[in-house]
Image (cartoon, rainbow, N blue to C red):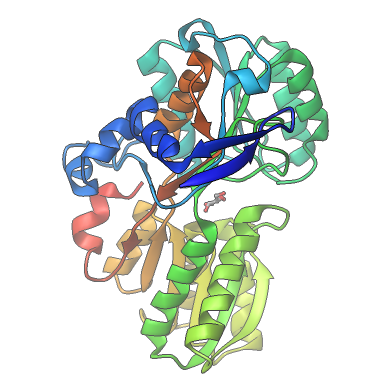
Amino acid sequence: MAIDLLDRAGRSRRRTATVFTAVTCTALTLLASSCARSEDDVAADQPSGDASARAQQLDEAAGSDQTCNIEQFGMEKFDLQDMTVGFSQSEAESNPFRITETASIEDEAKKRGVELITANAQSDFAQQISDVQGLMSQGAELLIIAPLNSDGWEPVLAEAERKQVPIVTIDREINGNPCEDYVTFIGSDFVEQGRRAADQMIEALGGEGKVAILLGTPGNNVTTERTKGFKDRVEEKAPGIEVVFEQTGEFTRQGGQSVTEQLIQSNPDIDGVYAENDEMGIGAVTALRGAGKQPGDVKIVTVDGTKTAVQNIIDGWIYAVVESNPRFGPLAFDAHESFGKGEDVPVELIISDRVYTQENAEEQLPNAY
Ligand code: AHR
């Protein structure tokens, strides 16, 4: 299929979609292996419980057809091996998602012998901006950023452009122009995660009931899209389900617990809780337990795939968990490597996630993080 693309200078380029399939199945080393192997093959031979278990798989049908290469970007080719990479983590490493994500980046740098410098903004956006600027002044020539917020990156983008430092963003998006402000975004389809969470909630409640949403932090595309996917699907498939309560639990366990405590006061007859990440869902379990509820009294659906959340499915407290895989190291380094060689890199790389349910939780627990 032929499609029109705009390059960095705004010129229209005509490419064929098969180019991108070829790119995603050959240029990115990790993807080359994931194209040939099934998820179960990969899961079966990985050690469990660390950053290398259940490697990310790209969803071939999702993502953008647009690509970016170093010529469009206006830079000289480079060898990843000779470069210093800076990694900026957004949130504290108390959440297993963040622990696993950072470990995956660090493990991959070590495996490839690439120099890595890191910073953690501890959920402070001003800190993250200064962290990334600090990484560049410490000599980072390539960046991997897990952004806290999607907007407000202008000072970093301007400096990265001036210093010619290509950016790969992971897990949340930076609002900007692909192949101008950044090379590629790697992450999940968050609208689809919301839809899948809704499917589980609809099944759990038999299509009827009152539901609360524990929202993630505001100001990023993950929260917006997980909310949209959930609400749209419920509206479309289960008009008998009513969303009666929505409040942010800031993606933290403590936040999920205190918001659920308020929820139980205002809506003691709540039937379901959709927590937009596992940490908030686990906090909700603590609040419900404290209020004398039994496992399964309130149906809880969450997103991420942490070991504690999947164990909570086995224990009957959580109905289902939609996976969001944080093992970004291999794909993020592959993207920088391919870009440095002058290859076309898709400007959006969407990974495929699974769902943990009562049927598979025990068997799949080793793939949780
Ligand atoms: O951006 C990814 C989300 O952020 C994860 O679901 C969550 O655990 C984290 O706080």
